[in-house]
Image 1 (cartoon, rainbow, N blue to C red):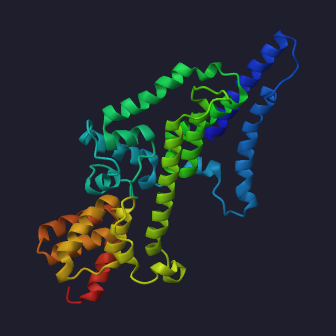
Image 2 (cartoon, helix red, strand yellow; image 1 turned 120 degrees about the vertical axis):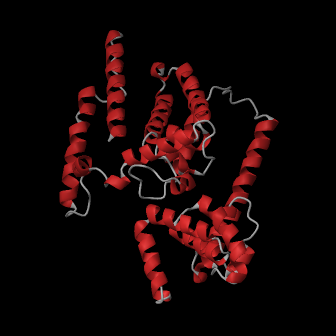
Length: 346
């Protein structure tokens, strides 16, 4: 909704400016519809948002209903951002480390409401950079982007292709204030293509690309090819046996060891597929501690508690169980029920 309102508003201003300049020069060619026609899309959007749920027979949540009711209290953006601000206040200068937000959220006991899901993104790019890298780094990164944008003066742009690129960048930036589009490949691709289109440079068709550019392009192709191969290899453990490549149908876990790009996914697979026993408790405990930083979810927490108990680390096991209860109350209750079923004497 915010993106549509922004697009229509800016396009209306550009269309009005276009007509004003054309009339001043007695030109009659316009590349945009009349501003009134563009603004008419706003009530049309709300009308469609009201009509679609009725046509779908109640299977689609109405936009107006969502705006009125909002998200459940423990899933709302306000609770999420309040938790993130609390984490930023604890480590404002250096942050918690890149990729450590989910672990920080799990280990922190907030005095107020708690966001109910695994929190691996702050749903706001400035906040996410601040909580993981620290406020100075976030200010430097955001400022480093804002400075060339203001220097380029996109509001003075007249070329339609460049205007489109600026518009796409603006929508992705707006989206990044409420969500995390730049964590998805399609948005990254569009963002990079727009930057490439807007980047100042020599455009003569007679100039051959320099050797450095050719080398960089070759290195990029090689990196993408290696990443694709490694992804296919590591993903085999997450597929049903009958869907795996023939070479990985047997001893899959042993064959995917040694990945540099996806080592944490390999650790997660090994942890969740291995039963904790007395003879492997020390190794599983270390593995669970590492994996907790990757995905602090119930399956990982349970393995950490079980291995700690077998190693005699009862205080640690109790502390993790308490965090488990607070972070995932339903899963914690189910885990207790399962333990009682396995050991009726408890």
